[in-house]
Amino acid sequence: MTPRRLVDKFALITGASRGIGRAVAERFAQEGATVAINAVAPGPQADEALEAVAAAGAAAGFPDRRHMLVYADVASSAAVDAMFGEVLAAFGRLDILVNNAGIQTEEPSESFTDETMERVLGVNLLGAAYCARAAIAHFLSRPGGGAIVNNSSVHQLIPKPGYLSYSISKGGLDNMTRTLALEFADKGIRVNSVGPGAVATDINAAWKDDPVRRKVIEGMIPMRYVATPEQMAPVFAFLASDDASYVTGQTLYACGGLTLFNE
Ligand code: NAD
Image 1 (cartoon, rainbow, N blue to C red):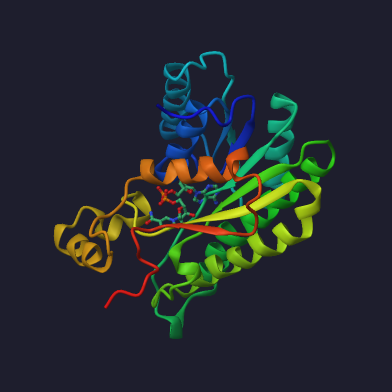
Image 2 (cartoon, rainbow, N blue to C red; image 1 turned 60 degrees about the vertical axis):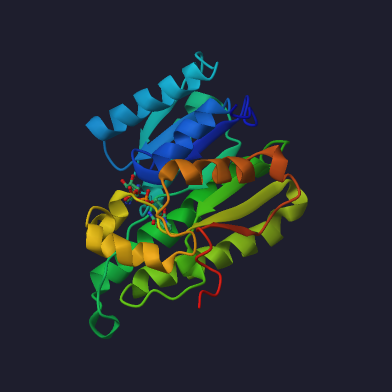
């Protein structure tokens, strides 16, 4: 049975209209949280995500939660601040931020474009920092602290040739996690990361439905298979919950052993 570790918690999850973010939103709702689902813009995908989150929560015994959609491009600090204003006005408080929104672009490192570098860092790293700033300011404004869980990657540790902007963004996210964890450890604010390995989502459209390329990826993973978003979601729930009350500044790699030396 799914644990109920997030009862009465209010959470904001960025980039949650699909993929890992949506699975995390559904899991949080199942564990009793009320969830603000961030998407870049309105559309059927966001509407479906809200319905799925509400249905998952209701089926788990939480039919009264008022989950919401909230739109913002996280690379814009003004949009992020407006989003937090909207969420706090609706919920009255926030306990958990999940910085999940992310993009990646393949480009040769000797000729990367300014646009790609700025956009990937803008979404993956600056966006996470803008959201963390707003969340922490709120956490400090009331008793009880709060939790931030960043969706990083094994590529904060393992280099990803051809994806310089992505690698830099996730390396920076790791330092952000540890810096904020240290800065606010004595204020009841915990900051951790999940480090997924290979997960079958749209960010991996290049190989996810290509049996030949997928087999190559599977061959690199000690567990020999690609994960589902649903396998990531409980890891986020753990780090967001009081089960991880003495855990801060850490990355929990959910990667089928990918970070281990594999001869
Ligand atoms: P995905 O492409 O399905 O999801 C990415 C989400 O981010 C989408 O909902 C997208 O709309 C949203 N997003 C993109 N730009 C945004 C912006 N400017 N503002 C707000 N939202 C924005 O892929 P995913 O795998 O679910 O990715 C989620 C996170 O997981 C990313 O941070 C990614 O780096 C990380 N991750 C994924 C894998 C993997 O193998 N899938 C591995 C390691 C880390």
